[in-house]
Length: 396
Picture 1 (cartoon, one colour):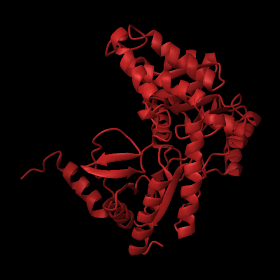
Picture 2 (cartoon, rainbow, N blue to C red):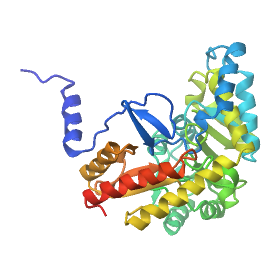
Picture 3 (cartoon, rainbow, N blue to C red):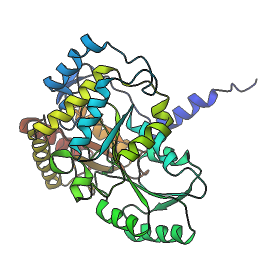
Picture 4 (spheres, helix red, strand yellow):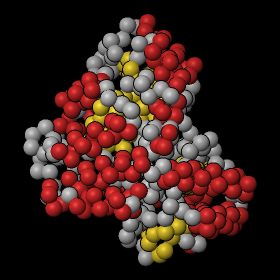
């Protein structure tokens, strides 16, 4: 009997299940709120990227609702043709103002930014793209779409970055592009962007930071990693997303007007994808305004983060190298991480395991994400669940 050409689909999925590497999709019944309904059960949300709880802000919800009456439910086209609305420009103007940059451009998603812009900035074999070893998968895919040579430096190792830059300089590369995550999404540590910028300037390289988890989190009232290190005028490309701290959806780029002009003429992910419907653009604009005018959301996020980390550490959990609201609870083996997640879910805490291939095989963890909307009572209930489950599973 001939083997069916798609037999590998079931086989490879089953292999993931057997090793504990598969994703079990949960159903969120309602909004991404601090207290949410997951698969019919009331839970404390600890795995959403909605850091500032802005997806539930009445001003943002109202902005999305109100524009439907004047602009309709869809944009009608790609922005380069007939889908370019006034609300798109207004959101980009406000975003650039918030980030103290000359201009900004909003993409459909953060992944679309990396896949569409990276290969255009350094497209040829005479170019080189130099990347942190732990960069996000969307950066890796963006690099693969380029014909440029590739250089990789050990995670946050500035000595090795300089070695790669020196080699690229000796080889006379036409364009040198250095890319790093700002906040590394699995560990919550921060790239030394000030040192990266200095090295890049020394060797005539461009700098590109994926600040998806830094937007709304790092810097003065959430202006991002450039502000965090005081190098916002030295980062050539600040990439980010609206789908995390801003509470909406969409990718973003901020920098010079030259960068924006180049991007919207060269990035096929931007040029060939339908533009955001007006309600999304209105929500993006409102989210930037809220973050600019209501810093208390950012302040509460960091108060909750410091308290939660301190209590986990005091219990004996290993929280890795985290410096941000992303706080991993290291478990080691995949099945143990999944067991901790299941046991916490039994006690009303929604916190998912992160396993290979998203992290190394022996570095499985529960990745907790802090939220400004959580109360101290919520945090204490979650902490009690982790302590109970952690002891049962002999993690602490």
